[in-house]
Image (cartoon, rainbow, N blue to C red; front, side, top):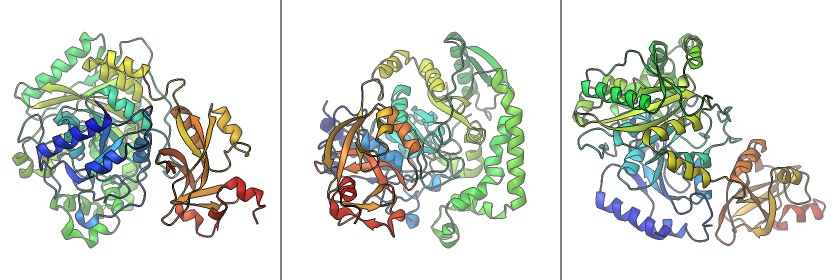
Length: 561
């Protein structure tokens, strides 16, 4: 199928499902098809439709965080969205969520609760409910969610999808409405681990505008294909016997795959998880929405309001007490990782109908997060994969966790569990960043040929390809030792150089780019959109506008007169 046919199929399926609570905003099909114009077929995600959770900024679409009174229209997309678009992916729309990403059920939203596509009447899980259902229902091949307490894993389990929660900081959260800024992680939903991993490789990498972004040291335990898998010594299923039997089958399958099963006392892990809603991090949730919660209390979902307002009672002493307690629990859990390579837990201990969730929205939300809330507090990466239906006909899933930097290792475990080894191998051979595969980079100033930083590009293996011009919507400013390119209405076309660079090298380059500069999507005069050097608009207030000279070299040649 051609990308245009894939897009047509996407919109046909969306129309057929009708108002299913998945979408908060949807782009016009014609606009998505126009995005294909000039798009390079060699891009790693060429023509792949996707959705993003509506707490992630997309330029031109409102960001609501599932609260209409909070809505705003961002001028710029989140960097992770820019990276996906630059890789050739086609944004379809923005998806429903538990308001302000506060909840794990998918029911705390004024846009209608999503149901699990697997079993009508059951919750979809949240907070990334719409993103998970969009993938599970076959509307898009992948979708972006976020995960603070389990929002990228609980919906994966309850919709039968793969939920990849990267190491904290691996994907920048700039342009994401904060839930708990210190813990938030963008996440990926897909039908396979291989697809989710391919998306992660595109969006991963630090960003100079995000102080929480980082590049964790890769961690991959040795010992060959088998691994030491920890499982709960005394698993809790809150009376769901069918779920208990399903997890026993999961453990048996892991042993059958050759892994060593190691019982683990989860007591300190669960104690850490309780800090998220019973400790000072509730105050961080309140801080994330500023004074909006106080000014718009009536506009909040009743349960969301109740959770946020509980943060007002947290004292400064309690904040430090919580931080100290978490440090203690990290010290207690650290030795566990000398005995195991990964931890396998039920993603959720049980699930609920929409009616059951309405009866006790807070208590049952706590049950849903029993095995998920500790991950980000303890700095763990995670991959949630489906494990079929229980004998009672309810969805079941397993999550693999390990310390930050274990993303590739966990993906391999999840793929092995799902029988995806061959597909993962094929994806590795067609990796977005194999030797020889490159993407274009628009260079504006100091990295151009003959300029001081050009040797850095050469050292990264980049090669000059052509001189090009931007679309007529940019302005160029003198920042002193380098220029700043800013997208502005009423701008002009600016000359740039295009250099071919591998995605891996592009990630290395990104780390070296100082604020207020960064990498983002640059629109060229021929309609193509490529990665390139851009400048934050706040930095050019008093800078000299040199757009009229057309390029940085022309300005230098004129003696900066």
